[in-house]
Image (cartoon, helix red, strand yellow):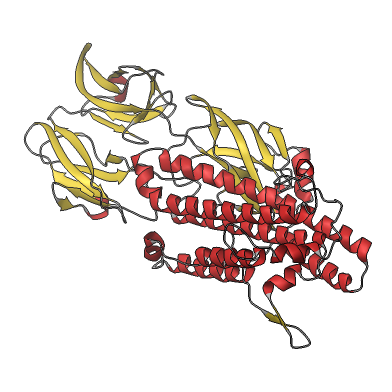
Length: 539
């Protein structure tokens, strides 16, 4: 799920929680100087984790917005989920900033207006961080905007945020609940958020009721209160990241994101036929999501497995019309195809696809009845034509603004060259490939990779359209960068992890996430920048 996992706490978060418990226990023993310094350390560690989580969330939101705004297909596919993700992002930012302002109210105790700290600029050490009276007093002060005590407003907002993050009131989420895997992951997240943001009272060993706010502010030094409030900010950032990733995944994201539907007619036979021969074509949606196969209709009749099969008759051009339906989408995506019936036909079949890609070697098998292969002459408008090593024809459309090319096939019969057929093709730019982590020559098409492979010296980055895609254009990675959880970015030249990257990965704990970004590749069509690749380091 693009980096989101069903794990309530990472090892780093567990460590922070344990440190907080230990420091709280030590506080009861009045080991004041060491305790205050310990809380400063805990807060600093959590602030580092917050920055890393924020960076990952912003990357996902940027990818989300790019796919959503790319075209009409992207809007149809991503709109509902993107709207939810934006709302979660906004709600989380609002609550996070409220807690930050609460922290400022504690840290700025008694300071002159010109000396007050600003948001996100509270130092680890300041005068008054050992004060055990002011946090309690500030918590009991009245918030003029709401008329409630500050601590009451904090608890109200915590309850509101927990409720917001654990209610499935959006229609697209309710529909998705029929997916058992989605429903299971949703329940795990809801349980985690209910625990992280609960405000229940607790019973002490003396059977006294301790309210949630008392556990935070009562007789606690300011440094401890700031550390605990920062812990809640860290929880908000984690929850925000989890849900934004979850929404992106639910919308259908993957290493190869499908956000538009292009009907494609792929001939399964020659496009020029003799009377009595059958024309066969497979109708597909270009770069289709294989988990959601479309229904295909030609002339109002559904085609089983997307194959249109009709007996040729007469002579001349035959045209047919149809549309496809994608699961969960009521839009009719229309298409049109045609074939020719001619006794003196020539067969022209693109080995890869039924379109030609600009500045790329498109492979064709071309034959004509009664004409030997070495007697054929082939040329094409706006393109260069040559013979491949295995006898196929290579048609390489020239870069430029041309939208179509026409392939002309001529036959040399007894010294006389005459045209035996032609076909017109749309010219399309090559789609952008995706970046993958590769161990040697093996591409890894998942976002969890064992540390031992990443540090083996064989790890690097490859550009590919994926194992299931027929298009096999070759691209060369020229450079990329690796971003680590602490925000450090290490640039690599070429396609291999350098020594600095390997050294940094060795120091990561299991469950840490790195992001491969700024991936530069060259190939057909020139230089390209590929999408980011989030990777979780596993055991």
